[in-house]
Image 1 (cartoon, rainbow, N blue to C red):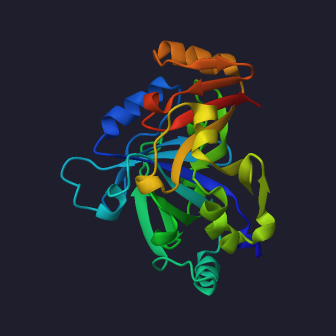
Image 2 (cartoon, rainbow, N blue to C red):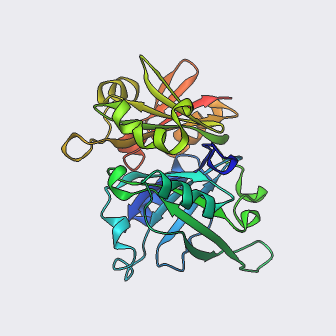
Length: 281
């Protein structure tokens, strides 16, 4: 396993389609500090919640742009993107081809970023997708940040809810082993651990967990189901510097939550179809 292919979570994508305004309001109510709306050269738009090692992206389109990137909007609303870090997109693409799990060739695009000094330089990216037919109800791809200094900025990394990083990404599947197989092919069998609680793939500070729908429901309550029983990305877990900050943010935002020992849960129904779990670091 080459250095560029060691599993490390870069960011997660929540498909909000035409609901950018609503999603921005809802995630601010959840206690996240979001960047100003950005507009990709490919036609999509987004808001980001930037953390220490990774980030969350609310991805959608503004009126008049529904015809752009139509492949994205065919995915269900909610958690649809599992994105890996790389600094060598060419090597990643070659490896994906060797494993017969490559999607389209690497694609480069940009997004102007509004900085506090009044300038708007372009944040530039190169992405390398896995084969679409191996990732039901969403996408998985590598992201090569050509300008990381325009993404991980200190002024965007302080959140009212105290969140420091995404620490968990949960996929519900009737057969967790089968759902995880593409990542075994990608990163090697030694990268995954199997147990009574499903399959775990360590990805930097985060862990990608493959669990059964019964396990997902037991942990998070009602979560979205995949089409025809297929796997579905359903939940995110966060490390926060203060659970009290999480509680305060949710109270101010008038978001219902379940307050458990060392854990605060927000239902998928109250977070754009994504179950959220907060733990104190």
